[in-house]
Image (cartoon, rainbow, N blue to C red; front, side):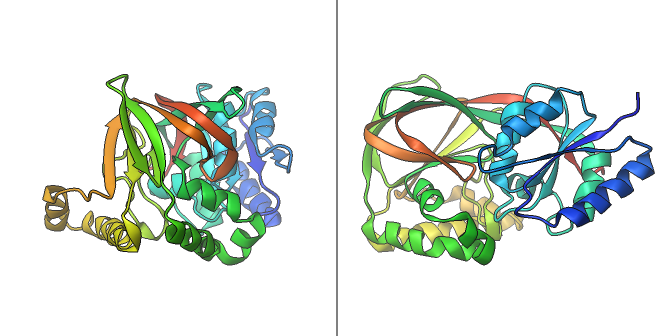
Length: 319
């Protein structure tokens, strides 16, 4: 039986006709059958489309969309062994960015999705407890955020992101920084002792780099079998300024070995508390919103986030 590709695509965020031409060119080059197409919708961000695609055993599932679409497809695809190809078409495209994939070149992305090498990467499993006690299980591949990150996802519309890109986040960021509301939490790493603290924002990441080359989690690797956690707890606007400066410098320093060594030898800011482990348990006194790879979810009282090593096969550029 000849191979074929399944294309899960967001029809709003990309030039579909151009994508179809690029897919046809690759399937002709490889002698594959016609690709099968599955559009996402308001009611299905990609998980249902990916499940339907998997049912007929494609050679690769190619997702064309942003981080939220990739997350939804990964939720259906992880553990199947079927490779995932990425055609980045969102605001952040953080998984593609952290894997060093081509951004802004649709044809190159399609070539990699069809003919690249396969790299196993980790995924994170988030078991969430809602404010009503209901339990849900979700998957993410980049980052989970509580606090500022969740407020950004909730307050920024899809239309604003399409029109303005990352500038759409300026207003919710400014509001959150000015208010600087911190909340109490209790947390454990890898089942260790429970600790109590206050924070403005918590990020649990499988990847470390944001847009603009900003390095949020310096030790995060997409395939190290670990999660990286950072808790932001600044004291006023000066504390936020120090955090912003630190993150920008971390992004620049990694390209220069001497500067990177200097950054690692400096004392961590009190405003930034880092941790690393295979499992992160957290409980809150009051419900808080959470976002997973840019998707907003209902407020939670608790979460258990663990890593599933090498659970997702992603196509990357052949070396």
